[in-house]
Amino acid sequence: MINKEQTTINQLKSFLATPPIWKGVKFGVRQFEFPEVDLNEITPIAIPEKLRLGHQMEYVCKQLLDESDAYEVLLHNMPIRDGKQTIGEIDFILNEAATQQLIHVELTYKFYLIDTTIENPIHQLVGPNRSDAFYKKLEKIKNNQFSLIHTKIGSAALLDKGIDATQVKQQVCYKAQLFQPYKTASLAISPINSHCIMGYWLRMKDFNAAEFMGHKFYMPTKSEWVFNPFKEVVWVSHSTIINAIKERLQNNSSPMIWMKKSASEFEKFFVVWW
Image 1 (tube, rainbow, N blue to C red):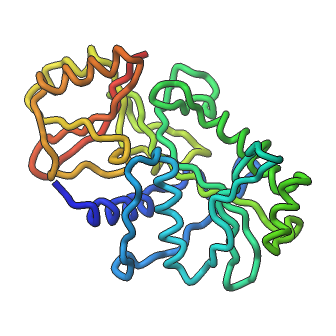
Image 2: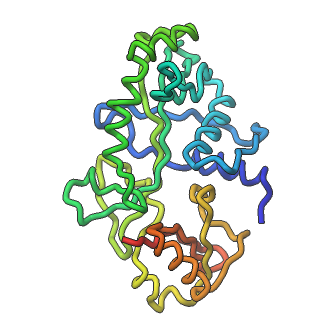
Image 3: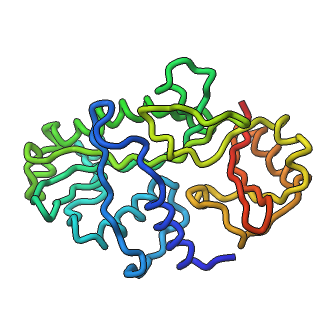
């Protein structure tokens, strides 16, 4: 097992290694180009384990940006309130050192399964439990999160911090791990970045096939989903992991599974309930 410091380092590495879901400008939105960061120079700060994964990634992103000379973090995770009601949150306001340009960056880190039974390619990217979808998140960013700083309340909140919303450019840091259908050839998913494909998804009947039975398995926690599989975990047999998977499927939850095929060969995939 690995200690908390190594876990944090792994989170930082995994975040940096995860590609953006598109490059440049797509869907009318510019992708933030994450600066290079020397991880050897970082003293990792442990990420609170009880946070949901999205908030953990915000902490990871903040640590990495703080280590970069390219940007200064002016605001992070700032709630916008109308009286006692929180109407939204600004992830990051950055100052680009080279240009002094202010940039509002909304961070998203997602896991999507590619469902090729859906005709529209943009609608094919769905969450493991189908309660999430790429196109819905994209619309929320454009129509809600980006517009927030230009509302009367949002612009006033920024002005209180000395930031003029009219001078702020808006970008996304939208990273994703994608999983294609089991036994599917390489997919052409343009304008989505195919480098985001990290594994595959299947159903229980496929997982019960003989080709899986001789390997070892591990069900990572949600915090571990971002990692590439590593050997320092408690690996179990196919027959043992099946019981844990069935329990999750009965609760309409699609678990991620790591598979160890050899001492140096690993795969990651989702077993879906739907």
